[in-house]
Length: 250
Image 1 (cartoon, rainbow, N blue to C red):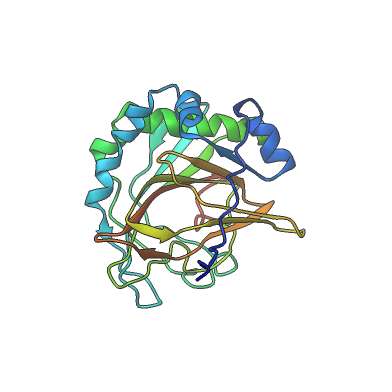
Image 2: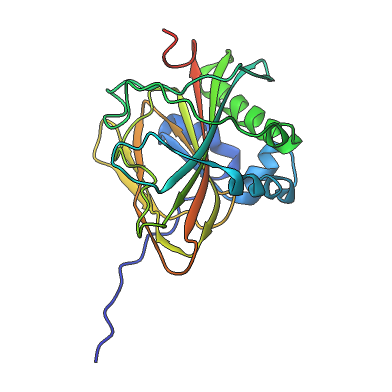
């Protein structure tokens, strides 16, 4: 009997770390290996990994309009001005329906990122380093940064990292960072030109792999995950940068 052939996800199109800003300008995205992410942030990879246990303490997302129970999250906001990162008073997350047809128009107040997590040097250095990349692409300015810790699990058999489908976020830049995968299949990342035919698909498998996106240039999504063992889940850190203020303030 011939064994059926399972289609393989294409190899991840990693970016040379010396041309991250150029890749954002020309391709609309950059994909970095974990070691390059740590080097960019000026920390050891072990320092980034030390942030991971906080994903075990996320709270259930009570706003899922598809009725799912597969998402846990925390959310906090910061202002990055000239490399100085200041945490903002806790606030609700808001997106217009034009960018999130499923959950847009709702003010969703999640539990904040734990203070112990924000206090770790690796957290602040990572956010500051990525803010510098954003300023290389669009000139230095005050960036309004939102940080989302996500855990998508397979308790009910399937988990949806992007239940809203392929989308933009309504910001200037988006980072999707894989923190970990456990006992799952799926979760393929897909990036498409917003105004063109080109696209890429790949699966981030190594913790602290980072995808940085120019939100005006591309749309993105991640495919659903399914369990291959107990406690299947996928952890990510999603960061957004927006000039001029947080969404909902204007």
